[in-house]
Image (tube, rainbow, N blue to C red):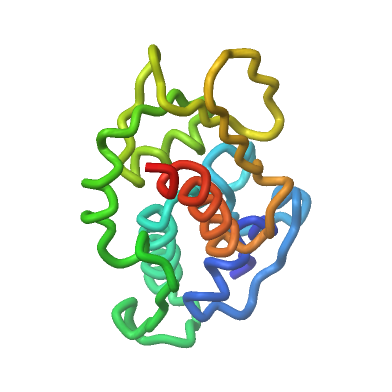
Length: 180
């Protein structure tokens, strides 16, 4: 079986114990039996489309990829998904409920879907008017008045999805949580 993944999804395959795959920016060029790509990636190939913005999305993507590859009789390092002992040193990974509860009073106006996913997971209230903060990706210019928080997009962060999420959560914590 020929599995091709994009650089942004490679980390998921590494975590679940896959070791025979090809990394390519354009999976279609490698004629895969299965492509593993970010949800917004266009491909003609049969593909698993992953969302990797939040820790729950990363965990769910790990499960989906693991179960799909097992079903396709792909040889993995682990016999079952529960054998994978992977943890992230972040309070947002295990039980974020106390943090989410604390954040629900903070009003955020957010630009971009990938940031909306993170803001929702962190428990902030998403609003259109009178926000406490405006959160936007680094590729946008925001002219609105207010406290702004710029967050790096996919291309200005590590390729590894866990490191990417850790940095984004840390930026939002430092710029928003620590001020309230």
